[in-house]
Length: 255
Image (tube, rainbow, N blue to C red; front, top):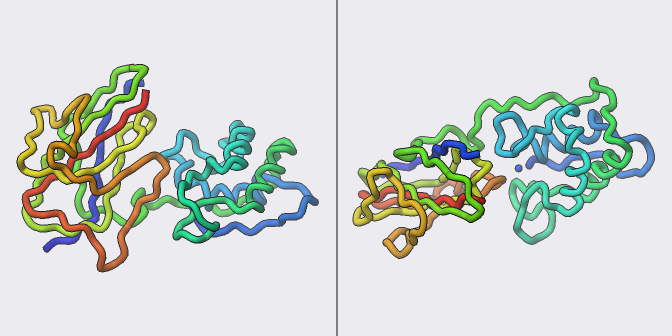
């Protein structure tokens, strides 16, 4: 039997994330600058998504990039909308918990309230090199949809169920499924399904519009939403993909 790390790739024609705890002074005395206190927080807490080529809409790696967004950053961290995390429990309870500490939120708030100063560029932390876009290593199998889907402008949500052409020739054990939409700006979420041989896809490779995959015998095995971390099951744990099955993915496009 074969064990693989699977990457699922979606191609879309445009119609239109943490790290280790950051130490810093919690004192209300002294200046707070981007170079000395804020950049290390962003480097460890935000840059996984907020970087060139990242999933977020803007990078925050430099003062020039972050400064125009200062007030919005302040609002989002105070309300804990950023970094996105939707599980309950004490800070640090989960592996790769991206949530900011009260001290980090306090530093960001003080920095913005005092005009978001840059500080001494020499105090910037070393830049992080993103050598690979795969958090858990290069995938063993990459699947692409048969055809790109062109999303038309619409005030309502839209659903498309793509069926991949790849058929598993043997029982395969999968430890990770990574979803990469071609245009993240329009994708609300995407769910990966196991597709039985009895489900035949149209020539386009997808079912457009109202389609219930569960009613056609598929089984959902993975989900993705913007900002979600890639998940790798522990060594010795995997999901079995039976011989003859394919993958399908239902994509929810926002208005």
